[in-house]
Length: 294
Image (tube, rainbow, N blue to C red; front, side, top):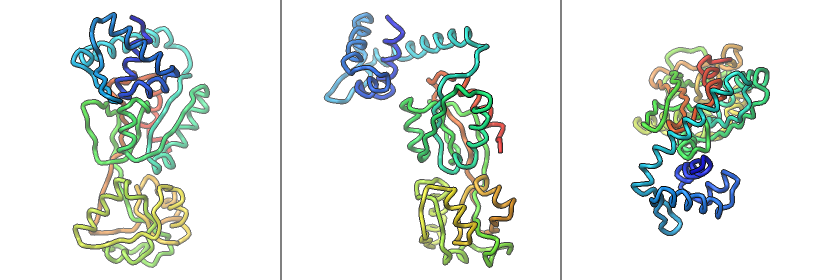
């Protein structure tokens, strides 16, 4: 039994596909098939059921999967113990949402560039649901999302921080600075909103539906930076996490509106899959995320 066979076996389990596992590992599909067949012969057990293009673990395969993860965990642990004093150099693939990428990632990336220049960082932005799906299939090392509190026995949560979501306008907007604004007073204004798959946007839509109110946005776009620029130019209003607009608000380029009848908050959360070996590079990203660099 070889380590590479275990790695291949785990990747097939994660991706539920021989062809996708082959592509991710840089093998031909036939090489993956041969490795799994040799592993099954050595174990004298059938690890996968193959029905058409769909593969699933057998009971024996499911039992062996736990041992395979444990073996690879110990192998990685041994490698790191011999490499504890060397600089960080492994790649890091982070999944996040647009607003966090724009607001929270620049100082973290600057720190990595200055202190760990050999670490190649890749960032994928998508909705929390899409990122979770990618994490479940080992396509991401970590995910950093803004959402309602999420829990799953397959995930390890290493950070959870509450964040207010606020209505913002230009300081020149006629209601800026006035307290006790009701949401219905704003509905006639042009709104620049994130797309409907943003979780805080869904919270707003649910509230409006419960009050039989309608908000027809002037523009829907995932680019938070573009929305902030439009609002600063007094083009309309928006509804965004406070961390995304904090700098503009402190510099008086944006005003936070005091809407009295609707308040919501989401949580910044960092996860990785429980079966994922946590590298030193992942540890460093988590440490910087918890520091809340600005």
